[in-house]
Amino acid sequence: MMNTKSHSKLLLTGAAGGLGQQLRERLRANCDVLRLSDRVAFGTAGQNEEIVLADLADADAVNTMVAGVDAIIHLGGVSVEGPFEPIMQANILGVYHLYEAARKHGVKRVVFASSNHVTGFYRQSKTINAENPARPDGFYGVSKAFGEDLSRFYFDRYGIETACVRIGSSFAEPRDRRMLASWLSFDDLHRLITACLTTPVLGHSIIFGMSNNAVTWWDNSKARHVGYVPKDSSDVFKDAVYARTPTPDLNDPAVQFQGGSFVKAGPFQ
Image (tube, rainbow, N blue to C red):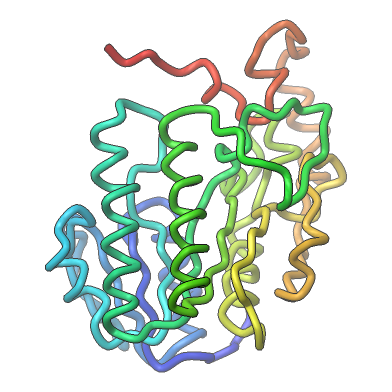
């Protein structure tokens, strides 16, 4: 695996989540000390680790969480579609608290876990790039679009560089035919984060988080300055995925649109 120790102390939020658990071991190669945070207790710190618990809706707790780190990988928050209020607290108010803390403590680089659901209402027959307007497929996608805009403001006003990584579907392997386009391996996710942490000039960049899949809806040519080169591909899983899944119903919105089932979620009242 990669061994690019670029920072003294990194902060990983959402450390207890599925991707946080995958990145915890991998990110040790990127720093001297890895600070881990989530909302509730998730165990004890290992060697060269720190744990600082914080609810993203609590400004004081977030300020303490950010103090003393050199860069942030922000995975924390609600990661699925659902009612607006919890998403607002964690993903909208929470990301504001994070950037305010970064500003106050002089943190100049953030890797923000955005989502493919920022553009979920583009059709699967269309290829888009970072300059296409957002078309969120739900409250979750709206919250991530807000985070992208907020991070751009903090770059323009305060010079905090951010990579908005629109994570596709990051699992051990693709679970269905949609994921043949959206799949991002755990190792490629780490490669992408490493590239974002180490590229000389990041600026404010939007990057689609995907592996080197033959089928894709996303064009990363606007982010070549970041230096991300995926090494994995969903192609090796294609035959198995086709064998275990039915032929898609082309009249199903989940098949028509890039956001999949998220475009059909709700209403929640």
